[in-house]
Every structure is written in structure tokens, then in C-alpha cells.
Length: 164
Image 1 (cartoon, rainbow, N blue to C red):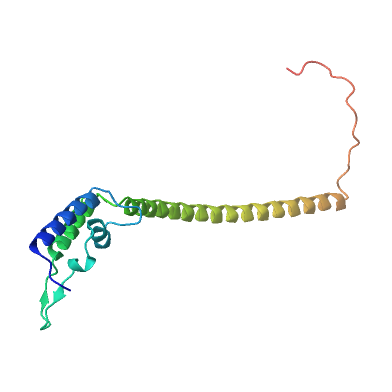
Image 2: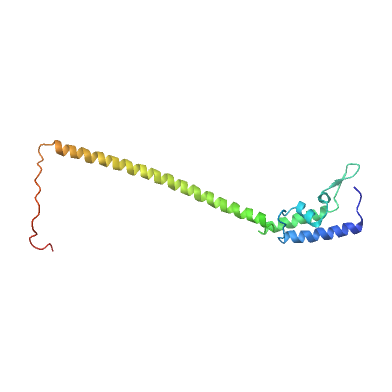
């Protein structure tokens, strides 16, 4: 690849800085993200200029815009550490992760409560069944016993006196 002129490099650096400001202020294109790929596309420069190169002898040399890529990453890290996420999609992802964690916690609580209620229901049904068996046993015992006499029921004909 041919070397670029100083004028083209200066013009590209200006475009990269302008695109960097737009990205870091939250102006992220719908099909982009807050990354070097989107920065290069917005500045209309090749992305490879942000990465180190190798000389013919194999020694490394910085890419023409590597210092701008490092500045972009540094500023992006500073913003993230301050709690600001310039990319609306990334902010939405972070918000949804928090909501998801809260919902998972709520689901765990509901599952625990449901298990507790199922155990309570089983205990209540067992007690009702035991009470029913005890009532039936007592009924059989009273009907089998010869000591118990059933009194005839009389209908109440009139009320004598007041109840108060």
C-alpha cells in the first residue's frame, strides 16, 4: 500500500477526531457500535490504519492512526468507568441485564414460595384425611357401643319466655 501524503493524513485525522466526538457523545449509527470499526466507517478511513504495522525487516511500527485508536479506547474506558455508556445499544443491554437479574431473583423467590405452599397444602390434606378417619372411627365406635341410647328428637312447638 502506498504511503499517504501529510495533507491526506491531516485531513483523515480531522475526520477521525470528528467521528470520535460524535461516537463518544452518543451519536451511534443504527448499524454500528462504539468501536473502532464504526469509527473508521464514520471517518471514511481504512480500519487497518488503527493497528500496528510491520516494516520489511519484521520490526513493528505504529499504524498511521494508532495513536487516535488508543485515545479513543482511553476516552471510552474513562466514560464507562464514570458510569456513562455512550452507545445507546450498550446502555440498553446493560439495563436489560439488570432487569434480567432482578427477574431471575424474583423467579427464585416465587419458586421457593411455591414449594413452601405445596408442602403446606400436602400437610393440610394429610391432616384433613387423618381427621376424617378419626371422625369415622368415632362414629363407628358410638354406633357399635350398646351403652349409648339415641334420644328421640322433638320438635320445638313454642318459645317460652324471652331469650334475653
